[in-house]
Amino acid sequence: MSEFEHKFQNSVYTRVALLNRIMIYIVKRKGKQIRPILVFLSAGISGEISEKTFRGASLVELLHTATLIHDDVVDDSFERRGFFSLNALWKNKIAVLVGDYLLARGLLLSVDNQDFDLLGISSTAVKQMSEGELLQLEKSRTLNLQEPEYLDIIRMKTASLIASCCAMGAKSVTDDPVVVENMRMFGEYVGMAFQIKDDLFDYGDEGTGKPSGVDIKEKKLTLPLIYALSKVDRAEHKKVIKTIKGYDSDKNKFNYLVDFVKTNGGISYAEKRMVEYQDKAFDILMKFGSSAYRESMHDLVVYTTKREK
Ligand code: IPE
Ligand code: IPE
Ligand code: MG
Ligand code: MG
Image 1 (cartoon, rainbow, N blue to C red):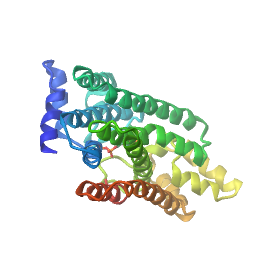
Image 2 (image 1 turned 90 degrees about the horizontal axis):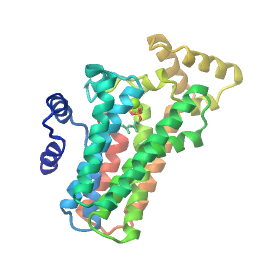
Image 3 (image 1 turned 120 degrees about the vertical axis):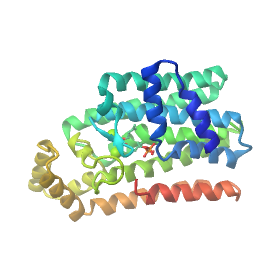
Image 4 (image 1 turned 180 degrees about the vertical axis):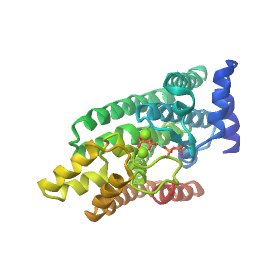
């Protein structure tokens, strides 16, 4: 990973002064780097890690960083990785352009090295992420979201990129379509568990490096709330929806909604579904021969569902 970080830093270097200042800011506040780690482990499980694997890892982290910057503009969120988000410091205009710049740097990294297979896999994911975020935005207007639609949204906006990490890792070392597809499926299940966990954070205390209650503020119904709403009578349903509609980050309203979700089993239900996806990922992992990479991959999946940020 230290070799990766060095390469990643070089991949965002620019001579444009303002842009470079922002790039230094981004590189300094790195995240958990789960996606590049997944690229390396998927490659290690499927063959011999190569330079192309490193480029795949940089590509996904570039794309991921770009989407987070845009996501914070879309969600009007001012905290990221325990510090101010780009839109909080430099405003939306600059954040939008910086996101585009990172996306372009990712694409160029692949084009310059003729990694067209990786480019194909990642572009599919980027397309799906945009579709997922747009579908979510559309659904937040009506406040009427059922579990199957929620699962579609998170599959598109989050699981698609994590699936592409695993497919790209494998593809960087083998052309065997069965191996690549198994890795892609594995990543998709990990991604589903990953986003359910992230959505649970929104109901918790701060301390994750991101504000809580943002999903409610943005009228994004997520699994804990969707389940709790399905358990109550019309009158209570109506009352809760009304509270969400008028929610303005008021602490008392937030506590009321968290209580409502907890009392009606929303948290434990979401945790149960998350573990189901984790187990599906494990089933696929067991198709691969035993190795240190498989062991680490297993631990990383456990971390996905047990993490505290
Ligand atoms: C955040 O992803 C966006 C989601 C898909 C929930 P991460 O939690 O992996 O973000 P960083 O890179 O570690 O900050
Ligand atoms: C995932 O959704 C965002 C992306 C797919 C980029 P969220 O909006 O829940 O992510 P966070 O919580 O802001 O990281
Ligand atoms: Mg967000
Ligand atoms: Mg979130």
